[in-house]
Image (cartoon, rainbow, N blue to C red; front, side, top):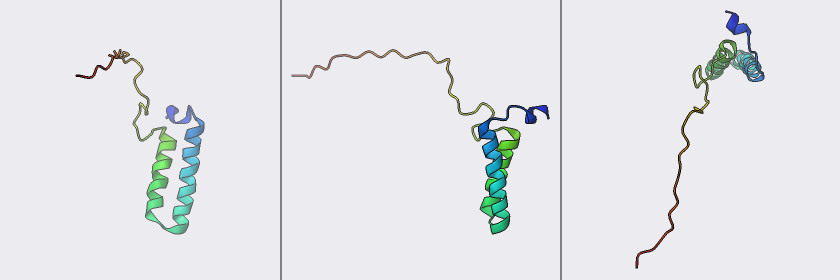
Length: 77
């Protein structure tokens, strides 16, 4: 429970506010698509998760650098 109250970044607050906004609009318009979108954004904002999973969309930084060799082009005669 303590994790839910920590690390409130700007993106997380925006997700929460967008979820609330879409939720209000879903109630007013009675559109099921906005209920789903509001629920998804609220869930992401409250639980601090993303669509990419717990690790986020970051790439691994421990990959070895590839070395490329460039050979001069010699057309066949």
